[in-house]
Length: 201
Ligand code: GAR
Image 1 (cartoon, protein in one colour):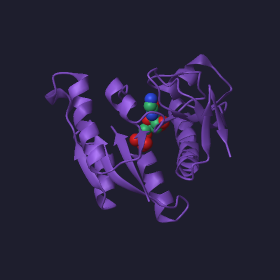
Image 2 (image 1 turned 90 degrees about the vertical axis):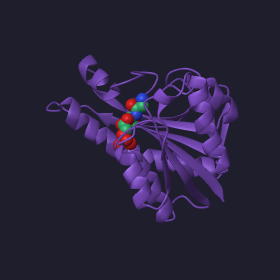
Image 3 (image 1 turned 180 degrees about the horizontal axis):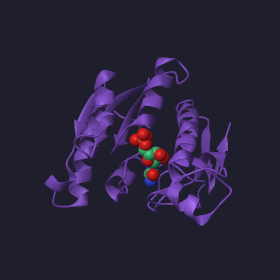
Image 4 (image 1 turned 120 degrees about the vertical axis):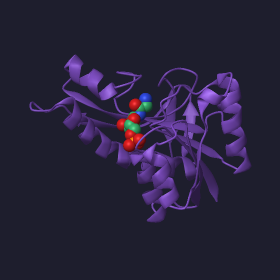
């Protein structure tokens, strides 16, 4: 049984998609051991507690450095025997402490077709740029901002009457499909990183 730790900052709909995928048996032999939020009142923490998953707030403001903040997160993850870390709307750049401890074992979901529109407000960035197609990406996390090897992507057309909000809603629906898919592939040990390329068996 693989143990998953999820880092969140907000509403947690991607967390919910993973919880549901495990519950309905789409992702097998895995359980979410802990959810950690850097934001105290993140709704994701409520979702975790409702699913009877350990949910913890770690306040970055209580630590003198990013490293000591991540050391606490690492302590929590290791205490729960976490093998795989998922970023699900976690709005911080992961530092060396976590990256070294979980090398090629941290995944992220991003609401654009990387390498286009990394960073914050990706859906709005894409909308304002005027692209006709955008989408979402699940990738391994490395030291850059949304730069790690890509596992899965799904495209979403930009419609004539879209607003940044309607576009973000349609992208989110695809996120909820590809994140569980990518987690399933990881859990089943079907991913190999070959340079920038992720091979799927
Ligand atoms: C999602 O759209 C996710 O792709 C995005 O934040 C949202 C979180 O929603 N992540 C990023 O922008 C990371 N740079 P959720 O809390 O409902 O899963």
